[in-house]
Image (cartoon, rainbow, N blue to C red; front, side, top):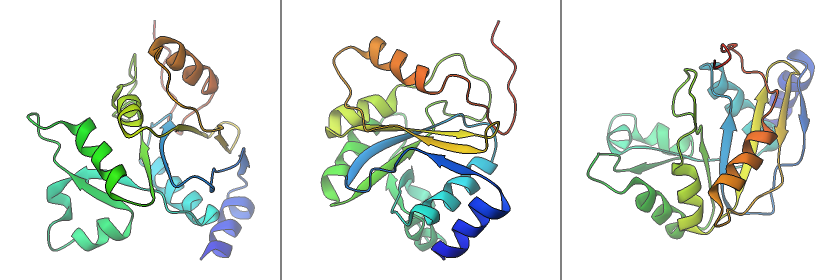
Length: 181
């Protein structure tokens, strides 16, 4: 499967990778920006096969019930209670503690629509679980996936977010979003 994925990604699609996936780390939070299309999910599945790495996500508990729960687990999913009364950050950090290997992927926009600011849950999950954050850009303009070095969140959220946003500067999603005015 990896050879087929590489053929499709590099030869058929003509994409490249800029940076190294941190295979040596077993636990971290991955943020993928921008999230503008359902194609992002397919590209994520493809690059996961190219790297031949286990990459995870969390989803609402009910997704993991019969009859399709096995499929979501097989795809790297972990069930959590995402109701308003639950502590999603704490529940997700708990998954990190329960598993030997967990690389959580999150789109910090929280939607495929244009947003003014990212949600901060990924940051607090990483802090609570005491794991680094890896930034991954799906740049459809350059036909490249850009990967950062792992970054540990500090006590200065404003400086951290400024650094994260600078990494994604100029990256173009599948769907072009209008500039915020």
